[in-house]
Amino acid sequence: MSYSDSNKLLESESALSKAARNIAIGGLSIALAFAALPWLQLARYGIHLESMPVPATLALPIADLKRGKMIDTWHAARAQHRHHEGIDLFASKGTPIVATTEGFVLWRGQDKLGGNVVWVFGPGGQQHYYAHLDQFADVHTGDRVHAGMLLGYVGNTGNASTTPPHLHYGVYGDAGAINPYPLLAMTPG
Image (cartoon, rainbow, N blue to C red; front, side, top):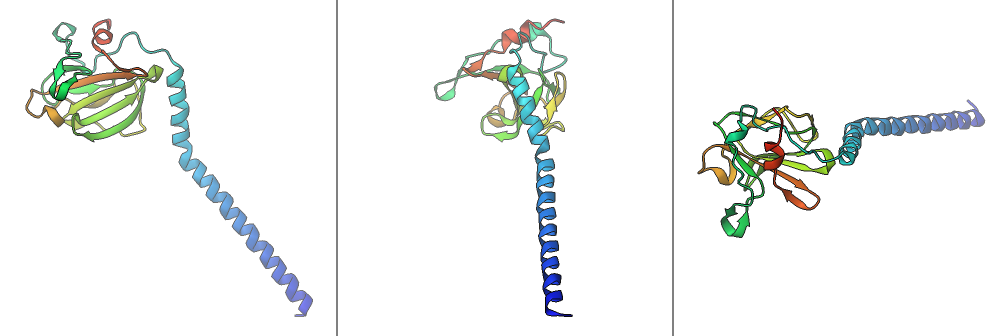
């Protein structure tokens, strides 16, 4: 092989190496784009939810709950000069808890006050807080939900360990906590 032939061979190997590297980088970019696709779709859905009007009524978060049995515990005094930012809906331990609106799960986990909690981002950018769950249903952060979809089961976790089982349900908007009682009490049916 002559000197010029070997240079041509090296140049073509170098060109092939660059092409392979570009394909690998391009493939990685495509793989990353597909990996990010669910989160991009979720962000798009979040923008859609934010543009929707806030609901005038909400589905009941405990299916067999009777409206006449609900008590408005909004702003009741709590320890350390706090006020109750939601309502407590009492039911037997293990009673199914369902989403009150469409949206997606912002977070599913545990915190000191609420114990096992699920946060749902819903129409108008409102955030719906389900606390003191005994157990979670098969929902995870980022999952889309619809009204009536199972989120978990009534319990008394977190700071409710000495109380009867119940769901603490809260709604939060741009200005802070909103009393959910009128939104649930006005639900037809």
